[in-house]
Image (cartoon, one colour):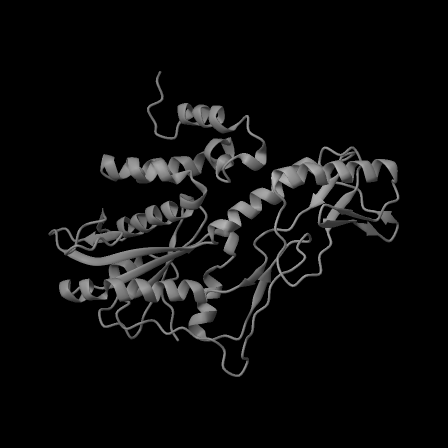
Length: 351
């Protein structure tokens, strides 16, 4: 029987045929979610959400979904629509309002607008994805060296290092291979502008998790402070753009936000920013040589006050079923509908 599902087995087979023969570092970062059995519930969720949209809109979003840059924005747009439906409204995607098309319009049973909703995805710049691929490519090349040691980059510069291009990476691996095989006790290797050290513990070099193959603890390409202020600025910009439409139609304006996993921003970071809590955190892995810096004034920590034209900040979680949690604005000109607040667990949040 033919599988007519958009992301069923036929899709998985086509996706594997297109990308499966590529080296892992050359595949889209979304590859596993698109093809692996344990991500089938994800694909089923996308299937269900897209089926609720007009065909042309569903086709457009499906065409962007598996692209690294668009995966999370599409996911969060669909998640926002799902939150609107859970609250009992009809969710209309990109309805035109006097020349502006907010992502969603929540529609009452009588056809009138209940509120409008815009979605923002907090995610790293495009260059971050390129860096991740570059370091992963070097990881894979180093893993061909038949010496079971762990290598990491040694770089004292106060900037995040850039990965080598493919040609330089080949030369680096040739140099590393020669040095490690010729001099097994080598601790530091300089190769084509990069310095590598063999990671050692109290009793000598640490064994590679790859067995008899070398392991490279590469920089993460996302090391740095975890902060929600960028997300708040984006929400402010959304309000500036759509406040006049909300006022004209006398409906609340909601901004839904979600964070790409690479940013590590979560709801607690947003709550800290709303409360003005003097907290700061960083993300990094053992291979990072520079994790960035930030400044915090403990006497006057940063605090975000929602604009009066914003009825609610709706946090979208980045795990299925991509639930939503409301942070209503107590000083909103047009308050959040109680119907939506009741449909978003944990939605009550006071000062």
